[in-house]
Length: 131
Length: 472
Image (cartoon, rainbow over all chains, first blue to last red; front, side):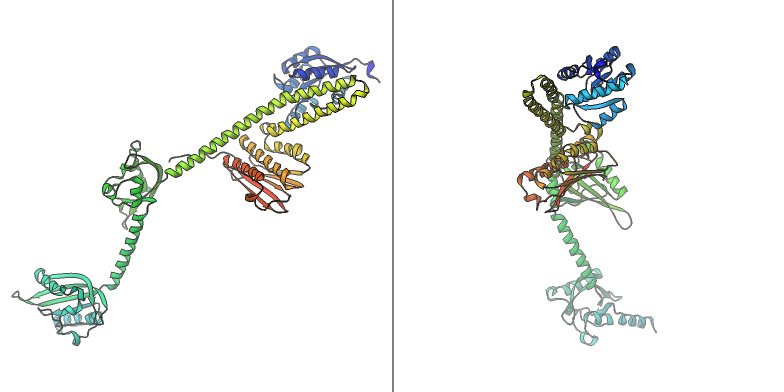
């Protein structure tokens, strides 16, 4: 089985830092099997864009305005249940990780991991949707 | 036996009193057992002698004077030194009674003498002791010690009272002790006496007024004095001028307050910098790193090593910035408490220094955030010392809830040092800083080091900062 025969994974990116938003969507868009369908600047936008686009995967910043990744995760689970959630954070914080895991976040990526790791994590999440 | 014979026998045999008679000129005409015992003369030796033999040389005019007085008043009582036959002296109580016949003619004198030497000595000793005590009390300059009568009027005064309050003895005796109280304390003096009567004593601290109107901060103890019948005889009052101590205490308090404000401001500033680095610098570097990786994918193979190097530099910077953030502001303390924060620090920082690290915590009470931050900072400083100086292979931290606070122990297995006071100046500075932090937070800090065995830093911080208050 190859990725070429599949419809690209539709990804939502949410981060309040414009440089990260842009870099992250460029990294994901550079992959043929991934397509960034929405970019959100805060948690509220992330929820509404997820509801509109129903993405396969949402990559959520943990700390962002509008309630942070936790709020976004909780709401997206309700409004777009099929969307798989990944957290993307600038710090490793076991307490926050636990909370996000409880809210259904599959993986927790520390900012600074390689692009390849990010891409791999998004693909893993997407595989769960398509399975 | 006639009653007269009975009396005579009685008198002759009484041993506790010398009872004898003098003729009108003062010659001894009778003697008894008591007289012989007390004065040492037998009857044969003394009969016919003039009674002035019993008086010491310095009292040569006294015998005649006493007889004259006895004649004038019917009797005379005297206490004074008398001389025994062997020349030794005794303290005598003497009663001389002039004896007149029915015609009013003087027939002689009856003399009763009692040896009071022992009682005299006891009284003298007591008097001397009281005198010494009085001198001590009078001479004490650090305490105002004086007495009040049952209504609160001053009946004695000492040097300390004069020094502290400014009144001389003449000025103050007879005045009511309420003159020492400031106007706003009207009613307090009486209240204090009532309380001293009810409880036996009363202790108070507060402002008192000197003669010149200036004030001093006094510690006062009032003791109610009751006699054997339980009747109030007055009050003892001991006053101490605590002004200097109060100033010193307040200066210390002020210094602590300043230090704690300083520490607070420092923590605030560190947190601000930490957030800035976290939200801005790290994000920017991460974004740069991601773009470099994208770019690397589009470059010809021969340029990739350069790009990889750049990327590695960025990654290292991110890692260093992250350590800086943890060092500046352990965010975990705010959100999850002391133990996760310390555990994280040991894992992320200390183990990276090549040290084995372990944390054991037995906390019945989680210290408040401000205290937790101080504990974390002192641990950081202690760990930094271990890293720089100890040459240790492992370090153990133990946290225990005790005495309403948290006891922390940071123990390493390093080379130790002989004496912290003579240690390396920089290290010494680090020690002082830890100690200051602990004391500012109202706790204590100590270091114990055994050469070649290791060093243990131990400190305790209260969970709530004790409020030092003035005035009662």
